[in-house]
Length: 413
Image (cartoon, rainbow, N blue to C red; front, top):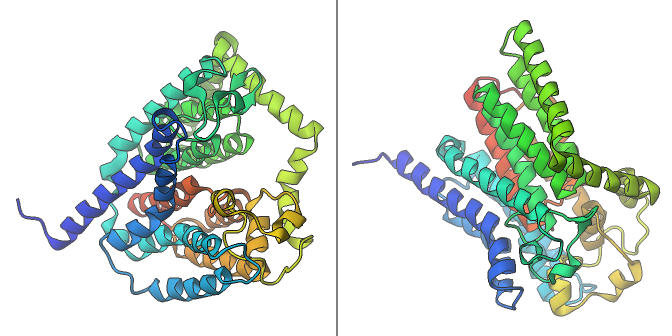
C-alpha cells in the first residue's frame, strides 16, 4: 500500500501521540507499583520532562512560523536560568525544560493542524477512560493502606484522604496526575459532542467523569467537570428540538437523583467530597486557592520581584536533588503556579508567559468566550509548567478541541 507524503506524516504523528498518551498515563503506575519508588523511577520522571522536547523534534511537520518565537523565549529563559541567585545551574536547566514543555506541544500543533488526526485516537481514549474509571472505583473501595493505593515516592500510609477513603490516583503517581487526565477527558467528551456523537453515550461518559472527579477528592477537578459539562450540553442541545431538550434534562436529573438515592457508593463519594468543601471553608483554604492566587502576584511578598531568583528553583525534583536556595527558604511556603513563576523569573517572566499564552489561544479556532475562560484557568488555576502531566494533557486537550471545532463546522475566532 502506498501512502502520500502527508498521509505518512499523519500516521507518524498519530503513533507518536499514542506513545505520548500511554507514557503519560502508565509511567506513574510503573513507578509506584513496579519500581516501588526506587531511584530508577526517577528516570521515568525525567522522561515526563523531556517528552515534549522529544515530541517537538521527532514529530513530522514545519517549525518555521513559531520557531522564532520559541527561540527568542528560549534565549530569555537561558538568561534567567543563569541567574546568580539560583542554587545551581542544574535547577536552571530543569527550569528551561519545564517552562517550554507546554509551548512546544501547543505551537507544534498550531503550525501543523493538518497532520493531527484525532479521530484515529478515539478508540484508545475510550479504552483509557474505561481503565481509569474502573481502576478508580476499585481503589476507592479498597482500604486506605492497600498496596494499590500507594504513591510513587511515599508509602501507603502517606496517601491523601477524602473522608475515610484514599483519594483516587488511577494509574498516575499522584492525585495531580489523575486530575490532569480528568481535564483532558472532559475536553475529549466535549469533542465527541461537537462531532455529533450519541447523546446517550455523551451522557454516560459525563456521568462517569463526574463520578471520577468525586472520588479524586479534587474540588477544582469537579468544578471543571461541571463547567465543561455545561459547555458540551450547550453544544448538544443546540442541535435538537425543544421537546427533546426537556426530555434530556429530565432524564439526566432523574438518573442523578436515582444514583444518589440508590447507590451507597455514590452517596459516600459525595459525602466524603463535601467534607473536603467544608474543611476548605473552615480553614479559609478556598480564599487562598482562588482570589489568593491573584493576590500573591499583585502583592508579591518576596525579594527580587522583577527578575526572580532563578529558573527551576521551586521545582520539587530539583530541590530534592540539589537543594533549595536561601532566598526561597526565606520566602517560606509556595504552592500556586503564578507565585512560583514570579519567584523563579520575576514579573518579567509572568508577563512573557501571559503574552505567549494569549498568543497561542488567539490562534485556536474556537469561540472567543472559551479562549478567555481557558486563559484564566491555565494562567491561574492549572499547573501547566510544574505539573508534568498538565504539560502534556492541557495543550493536547486544546489541540483536540480546536480539531473538533474545525471539523464540526463551528469554528470561530
